[in-house]
Image (cartoon, rainbow, N blue to C red):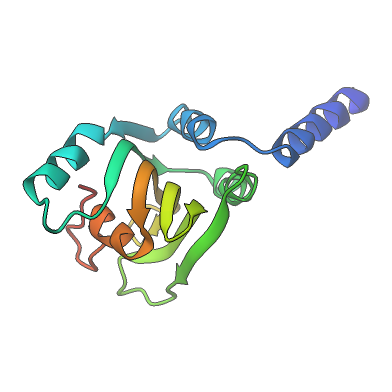
Length: 162
């Protein structure tokens, strides 16, 4: 029995070492208990068409997963983000203040020159629910300074993901 448990643990560790792509990452996290999924591609494309002067980005795919995870799931999330193949952390912000809506914001991206071609954002929320998270995956052509505008990250209690 101990060998079986050890083999399973080893298999889980080895699987995360090889990395995964962002679609696999989102698929795994949307399947977890307590998580909800939404495809935002049409909404974001609509925003960029309505604001062609402002929108300097194009989006091929946009999806969001939100919910509450267990303490173990919360720890696994960081391992999964670190295991994303070809992604690197391009932005990190942490707040310890109880008045901030966001406790943690991280962007993992694949960059091509001045543009981000694929992005996974992790946002830990400061809510009554412990371990409340939002995960966003965007595939397209985005300048890093436009990411916050696309995600509509404002420090209000009514923040929404466009």
